[in-house]
Amino acid sequence: MTGYRTPLGRVRGLGAAKSGVADFITQRVSGAALVILLLWGVYAAVCVARGGYEGATGWLHAPLNATGVVLIIAVAALHMQIGMREIILDYIARPATKAFLLVLNVFIAWGAGVVGVLAVLKVALGGAG
Amino acid sequence: MSESPTTDAAARAADRPLSPHILAWRWHVTMATSILHRLTGAALYVGALILVGWALALASGPDAYDLYAGALGSPLGLIVLIGLSLCLFFHLANGIRHLVWDFGRGFAPKTADATAWLVLAIAVAATVALWAWLLLRGGGA
Image (cartoon, rainbow over all chains, first blue to last red; front, side, top):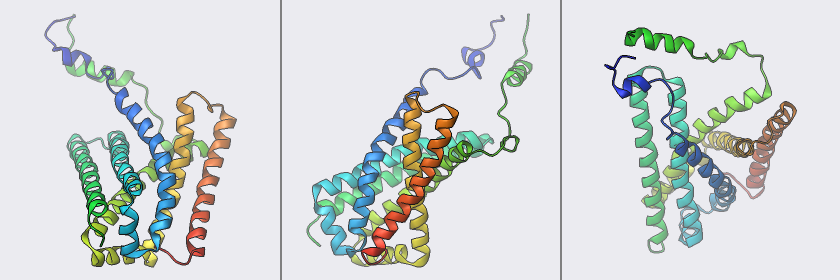
């Protein structure tokens, strides 16, 4: 072996550096959480479906309901970011396009997560009406 | 013994196993559920954004909420919601199937086939049940 190559150059293409498993586990734990959260979420959607603005705000004023919706938005943002990243990494070959989409994915997931949670909190913690 | 980086990388790439193209496979239900898991996941990405839009509309006041709920209750909105509920139930049921696989169970070909059909049946049945429930209670979004 010649000694001119950098350590990075030698290991490039030889596989993961033993850190990829964290997202693998996160994706499964968040998925398990979403199973429970979304079974409740479907029921919640049926409850809120026909109540209009008053019904929806009143429903979100119940702390347990607001907690459930905040958890769904936060955990879904995490789960969908990891999932979409996997899709991008699998199908987008061009480095520049891949990098752009990966960053866009992070921006969308975090943006949607923060906006969604703040919107729910504003309604849940705001005065009646 | 010298190695040039480029030929080294090329040799390494040639050594790696190639994934056969999708058209090389006979169609199979487990393959369909695998593809659908990705497709429904991508659709639910949009679904999550629609949920966030709902929260945003609610936080913006009655007018914005009525506009948003009206759009979701329109024929086009209902088609999207029905489609998303189908995606949700499929992804949820198939996700449980994946979690069982993560514990090393359910890999036998016959079991995997049976659970694939089961997941598809659950997705359709749950979607029909949900919208029957909604309609029997009198109306859409």
